[in-house]
Image 1: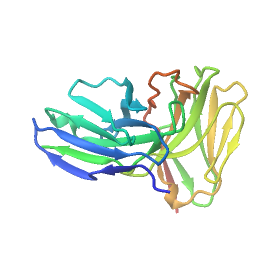
Image 2 (image 1 turned 60 degrees about the horizontal axis):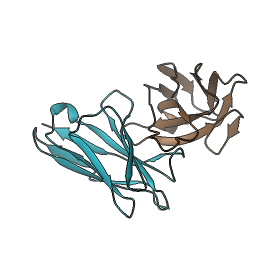
Image 3 (image 1 turned 90 degrees about the horizontal axis):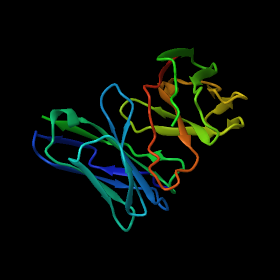
Image 4 (image 1 turned 30 degrees about the horizontal axis):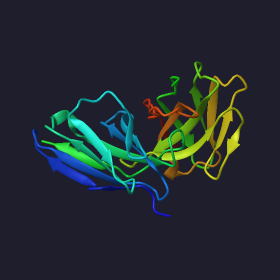
Length: 112
Length: 114
């Protein structure tokens, strides 16, 4: 069975630009969560979507937004990129809320 | 979610059992203990989780103390490929409709020595 997939794998942007990252959950999973991991730190929770509705967000500015589509795939959008947004962005899917989350390989974003 | 405390790093000889401790003294009755690991630059990999009973799967065993204030992840026969950062996470069993994002600490960097 296919795991969580994310695209692109790597991305380079400049300050002020915006970026869209994509995630496809494991088949049958209806919840998608997004995490940011900066170098040397553990992943930090950004958003969770379940049944196409936002169920919560972490301590991130409004420049970060996301959505979930009818097929349960998800996009993470970041506007007005800052150098500090350089990180590994991870997507995790689960059958539902409160269930085990399985992570994708991540998208590595570099902001110059 | 309750906080967890893990050693920053540990070494283990290849072929030996790796025992990774985690303290979670403020854990609540409805909170599970989850373990993930992250090999360099990859996404975290789910290992195992438990509520109060010991658990075993093909990857590892999880031993939770009777008072649930600490746990130990056991990799029975460590290989070089087990070198990774191991995260112990406590989370509620059901979110009740609210967000249940995982709270990661810095984890334990386990180094398997040949």
